[in-house]
Image (cartoon, rainbow, N blue to C red):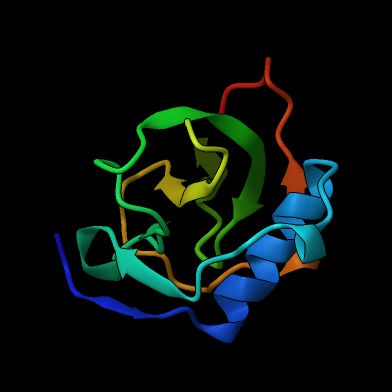
Length: 116
């Protein structure tokens, strides 16, 4: 595991937006301010809560974003079995580095039946 760091403002903005898209009130949810990057931050994925504390329970919301190189990115906000935010996972279709960090107006809820 990598070192924990303070969540960035753009990450917090996106998490709060994803919570709203999931039908949740971001003000009523404890969003950890310390995160850990997956893959050295290559695709943007961050972990909020130690998986060993409580394992993955489910996805809260999944959105689609098109990076500035026109490559689709799926972003999933997950929770653990204690109903805490577990991670915000980015999956870029070609596994390349994320170029432009998404903003709320650039993401759309992913159709669960759609393939990217």
